[in-house]
Structure formats: C-alpha cells, structure tokens
Length: 394
Image 1 (cartoon, rainbow, N blue to C red):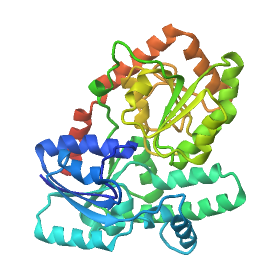
Image 2: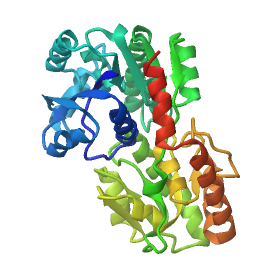
Image 3: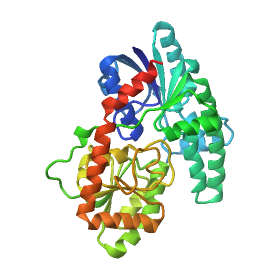
Image 4: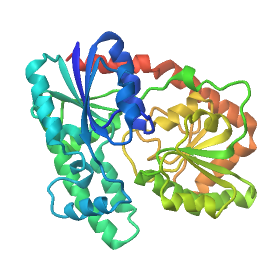
C-alpha cells in the first residue's frame, strides 16, 4: 500500500505515549508499505525530521509554532478560546500551509489510505471522508474529567466550555471520516454511544519485550517510580494527588520511601515536590526510561484524569516491575486486578497496595511474572501492527 500519514508532530525525541504507539506501528508498516509522512515541524527539534527515515519513505515538514504553556502567547490562546468554536487544544494546530500541502499531495499521488493520527490535525485535511482517524484517546473524556477535578470555579467553568467544544468537534470529525481506529474497546464503545459512530474498531496497545527486558543487574533508583510527560495536566494532577494523599500514608510505615518522577518538562508544581522533599527525585527529560524502571520496586499510575490507554503500564510489565494503578490509569487495558496488577482509587487502598509490594518479594515476583506472560502472549508490536494494517485495507 501507499500511505499518507498526517500528524501534528514528528516522532523524535520520543517523549510521549502517543509518539511511541505511532512510531512502533509505523516502523513495522514501513517494512511492508510506502509511507509518506506529513507533520508540523516545531522549532528547536531537528531530530524529528532527521530521523523520519526510520519510519517513512518520504517526509514533508510544515513549519509551525506552538506556544509553550507557560508563555504569554499561550495565555492569549486561552483568551481566544473563550470565543472560538474550536477547543484550544485543537486550534493550536491549525495550519493553512499543511492543508495546502495535503491538497497538493492528494492530487499528485495515488494513496491507498490516508491516516489522520490523533484528532488535532484533522482540521488541516481537506477530504476527511477519505481518512482513517487513529484515535489514541477520546479527547472529550479527558476534558470532562478535568471538570470533575477542577480546583476552583473559574477553572471548572473554562474546562466545561472546552469539554463541550471538544465533544462537538470530535463527534463531527469521527462521523465524517471513513472509519476510526481506537486503542481499546472501551474507547470504541464510547465513540459509538456518544457520537453515533459505527465504523470504529479497536487496535490494542503493544510493547517491545526485548527492549524492556531486565538486565541481570541494575542500579537502585527508588522504591516507587512514575513515568510520564510532566507537562501534561492529567500526569501533573495524578502526582500532586499521590504525593499529597497517598505518599504520607505509605511513609507512616516506611518513612524512607523514595519516589522518582520521570518525564519531560516538569511543571513548577512538580519540581517543587523535589525541592521540598529529599526523598523525591524529579528527573525531567531522560535519554532512556528503562534504568528507572529496572531500578525501582513498584511502578505507580495514580491518574484521576485521562483517556485512551497507558503505554507505561505495559512497559513496566515488560520490565517485570509490578504496577499499582487507579481504575482510570488502567482503563482500556487487558489487565486482571489482583493477578497481574493492583487497582486502587482511594488513597488508603493505593497506599496499602504499594506497601504490600514493597514488603513482599514473593508477591512482586508472582505479579510481575503473571503480567509479563500476559503481554508476551498477546501484545507484541508485530501482532498489533498487523491488526492495524488489516483495518487500513478495509
């Protein structure tokens, strides 16, 4: 097949779960098909275009500036968002230049399939009816959960406005495209129920077992580890909740319990956690997350907001590290609570599950082995990419 793949960014540096999912899928599709990749090219990230040869036959960079969330320009976008029909999270990626380039490519090339990767670049695609929408999340669900956990009235009102606009825009796009690929049956069912979409099928999340295979020896990092982009609001909220509500309960029994928060661009509130607690380490961007998994006893996923599926859970399982997650954190994944993962939503329950693993090496071994066997059998990237490929051929 000859594919046109449309995305709001290039895939390196690979710091987000969605980038990992796309990269691993595309690398395997590229082995069998001709992939044309068009993406917004953000300043200061030359690695993105340079490494696009790893997963595409030809790449088309479209210069685009997305203001940092701490900038005055972003504050201006938030104000504009009060009056725009599009949600701010979408309008930040509007690009007339990308739209013109896609029009040109679809006239000059004969593509067998066009993939819109995430909702955000859909506004730049002239003929959505020809596209397959690859939905890593139900975006409106994330914003509805922001409303539930908003810390004050102005935030809640703004999140409500953005949630309504996201729901309207997402539903319209999902109904216009040829079909939708979701990352879980739960997301697919949400889109059927909320948006009236029938042409939607799930493709599960995969993991590279060899890449995460644990070495014979690893340097100790921390008791607990959290992996995730630390400029993403659901991750920030999750770690603020964990350190305020759960960690003090753990430390009543284990006063020296250490925590590593590993992920790019930590918000000021996350950096302050380490500044005020010598047993908390905030790394920022790291070249390789694996040593932090191998060097920790338990991987935590204390998310209260989110959508899609969390790659970090399968990665921890591949590294043979037991996982404690909230129900939302493990949402959409093929996991069995108490057998290959612990699920807890109340602070006391979450703390007790962490303590059980920190204090019982036999339990750690049993849970880690069960989790690894499950993903080894069902969730290699080769199996996942073949399913994705089948849906593109429909």
